[in-house]
Length: 363
Image (cartoon, rainbow, N blue to C red; front, side):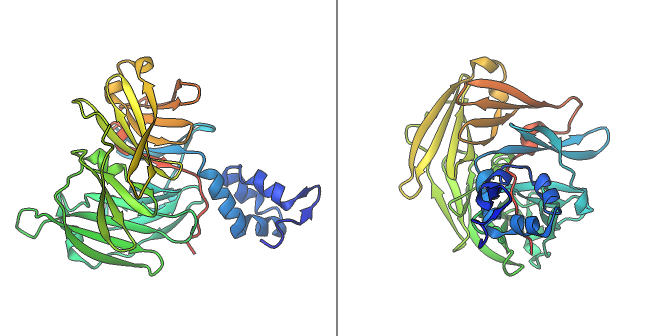
């Protein structure tokens, strides 16, 4: 920005911007109303890029809690630094379910209206209603007309563009499902859906489907067999494969989870006693390195029921049936961040999503 090195009072703009980039978004939106100068300062592309860059270094998770008795759900934000807060999605004026998360954006589907999708930023309460696709097969996914995979892709370097992916096995009317895998990709640049069809023999459990990871400009899903990671290249609409580390043990009882770590693909392997953390250091050569091995003795008994949801360089967020835990890798300390006090419809890991606070322009 032109005025980034100017001074306004005691501090240069650059110093002010670096201070403000560490504040919560809600505070920033209040500060923008102070005066025209501050509005211009905090709306500039340079500041937006700086804020998003700082946010990428921290992480949190969103948990959708469904109360069985009241048949309603609420969105809880668990932040290692700021604690727990509620994130209402009432600005959508619809009953929705979160389907995917990426760099501060959520993809939500309408509960009463099948085929209706929203993309929103719960921090700024901005959203976009996606146009309905005209393709009839999108309502014939197997099973139950629901897409097997839902993903959203948003690159922080271009905070005005995003893609939404709906993919699943096609079930012709009156027939059994086939191996035909249909992908519908929404492009915000043109406000349209495009379709491509492939054959797919890999399968996904619900947990694998939830943990879609966007790195290197591509979407990644772990298969239920742990045979590979399926990669969707949105530039050319092609599916690729990344294979798991050769040195990773494959004993019975080991579970795998796919996460993002500082812009890299990360894989976590959990057994009864250990949690191994791997990082894909060279994406092209598929070069994996184990960066940490964590003992699970401190949470003995919870090991078989913990699911890693998100991580930064320092912390790992994990969900159990009723709790959200954080493990600090630098201090080797476990901490309970949130616990469900009443009955919920599903275990927390089914409705927990990695999240970070970002500024995104829907205009």
